[in-house]
Structure formats: C-alpha cells, structure tokens
Amino acid sequence: MKASGTLREYKVVGRLLPSAKNPTPPLYRMRIFAPNHVVAKSRFWYFVSQLRKMKKASGETVYCGLVHEKSPLKVKNFGIWLRYDSRSGTHNMYREYRDLTTSGAVTQCYRDMGARHRARAHAIQIMKVQVIPANKCRRPAIKQFHVSVCSFPSTEMLTVFCLKMGPGLGADTEVVSEHVTAVFNMSVWSAWVRCTSQQVSHWTGAVTSFSLKPVRKKWPNSSSRSSLPSYNLAALTIGNIPT
Amino acid sequence: MVFKRFVEIGRVAFVAFGPHEGKLVAIVDVIDQNRALVDGPCSGVKRQSMPFKRMQLTDYVIKVPHSARQKYVRRAWEKAEINQKWEASNWAKKIEARKKKAKMNDFDRYKVMKAKKMRNKIIKHEMKKLQKAAAATAKKKFLHMDKLEDCSDTATLHTLD
Image (cartoon, rainbow over all chains, first blue to last red; front, side, top):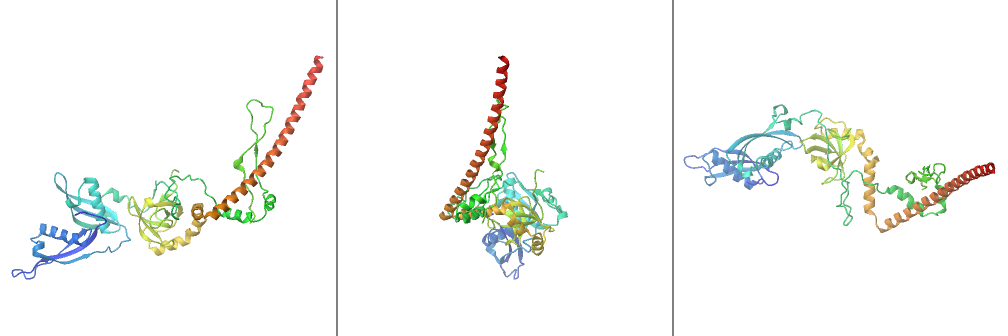
C-alpha cells in the first residue's frame, strides 16, 4: 500500500461465497485504514487471507464503507499497536499519537514509522487503534500535553503580513523581521490631502507647535567659544493638522 | 522576560497565511507540538486544527477552559472586546495602512507626492527660520565676547608703555 495523503478509515465486511458444505458462511469485519475504498478492499483480503482460510477468489465483499470520525473537534490520545518489517526482522510496536481523528493519528503513525525506522507502508500492519484516556498514556511526549495549564512560547519568526492585493504589487516579498520601518499613516495623509486643496497661506499660521531644542555642542579645540547650535532633526514635530 | 507572549489556552492569535489569513483566532486546545485546536467564532473561522507556524501570537488572552465549546469562546471573546481592542491596536492599523498603500492608484500616488512635498516645504521653511534666529543670537554673543578680549589687550598695552 502507498499511504498517500491522509488515510481514511473504512469498515469492510466480507465472507466466503456460500457453498453446499457451507451455506451460510460467517461474516468478517475489519477496520482498514487506506487512501481509498479500492485499496481498502484489497487490504481487507490481504489481512483476511493471513488470518482465515479465505481469499478474494472464493469470497465476496459484503460491505465497504467510510467511517466518519465521531468527534472531529475533540483532541484525543490514540494508542496504536502495529507490526512492521525492519531490514533484519519483524517487530511489534506500541505507539501513541495525539490527534483529532483516528485516521489522522494512523496517518501520523505511517509518517512517523517512515521517518524513525525507514519502514515503508507496505511493511506496516496496523493491528489495533484505540482512544486512550490521559491517565493510561505511556509516552512522555504525549503526557507533556496533559497539563491543565499548558503554555509555552512560540519561537516563530514573524513575517510582515503582506496581503495579496493584486498582480505585480510585490506581495510575494516578505520581510522577515519585526523591525520594519514605519509605513505611511494613511489617515495623516488623507488629512494632508484635504488641506492641499486649500490655500497655502492657511498653513503658515497653523504650524505653531514646532519643538526644536538647540543642542550646544562643545568643539574639542575652542572651549571658550560657543559654536552654532546643531539641531536635533529627529525632534521635529508638526502640530495638529487642520482638517 | 525573554518571551512575553505564550501559546496558552485562550491566547488570541493572528493567522498570517493560509486559507484564513488576516483573521484572529483563539487557541482552545493544544493538540501537539505543532498544532493547536483553534476557534474564531467572532472572526468567521470554524473550529479546526491549525499549525503554530501559521499563527502569530497577539497580546490578548481570553478566559476559557480548555476545549470549551464555541458558544463559550464567543462569549469570552465578546466580553473581552477583542475585536475592538484589535482595531485600535497599532498592529491592525499598520495592516490597514499597508492595504491602502497597495490599493493606491496613480492619482493617489500623485496626491501623496504633493502632500509630502508640501509638508517638507513647511518643515524646511520653519527650520531655516529657527536656524537663522539661532545664528543671529550666536553671532551676537560671539561679537560680545570678542569685544571683551579687545579690552583686555589694550589694558596690557597700556601697562607695557
């Protein structure tokens, strides 16, 4: 099986075809995690032939249906029992995952097994999946989230939020820094724009509250003479803009 | 404090990219190291899992117990007036400003250019006035001090004679 995308849970029911010796053969049901129903039925026969004297040629699929998650908005702890083939043998494992859905947890398991043990999907057999209550969890990575006050800092680099406003506006460029220089304050500009329509003479009277502090700089050579004061341009502020 | 904003139950986060970019959500539960169960009843985000990478934490925290139902998240959100606080914050204002700037057409850019030119003209005008005034007072003082020095020289001359 290729565990593509996120797996889905299927309930597959099959039985042997009825015969003279066995007019009503028993039904067997399995929980199969597969990407689609075709693979689900195939896996069903794969497992059932391993466990019972039953094969697809002499049997029939009675039912194959998707199983939806009962509580997809509740965080659950899943215990997964599995069996996998490594390079030198086959082993049993018990793994725990935290997820919203069973299929999500099983998908996580396949990815995790591939990452940690290089086990491919065809070499993994999921034996049992069960929701575990928090006190029964065994793995510390899962238990660390069972704290009533779970808080930790987020160490994400803040990117400047650039909305995609239209083509060719450079919205793809991201400045990866919190210290972005200030952008125009459009409300200030709108006020300015209103004013430019009036005469300029209105302005000269209006700009009254200039705060400018002359900074007396001591020249290194002449201590007696005072130099021309230098201005701290950063302290320039403009008073209220008339609207 | 090295870290000021923490991922915790009730923390309001800003969604930076993805299908819900630009919206605010509340962290309702932590699924695992990379994902949180997130809900934004007052910002149109259905309850879902969201990776932390997509979220940027804000300063606001609402008081909800973990895995609280959407009804209670909405109640706590409205009680804390998160939407009003967000609109009034500098972060939201900067986003608005960026949006407006991106939406500018040629006429808007012309208006901005004219406005900036006018502003800079006024600033320079006042600056020059103040500089002139300061220069005038400095010159006066300089001349005054020079006068004093001259007097002292003549005094010595007299004595030598």
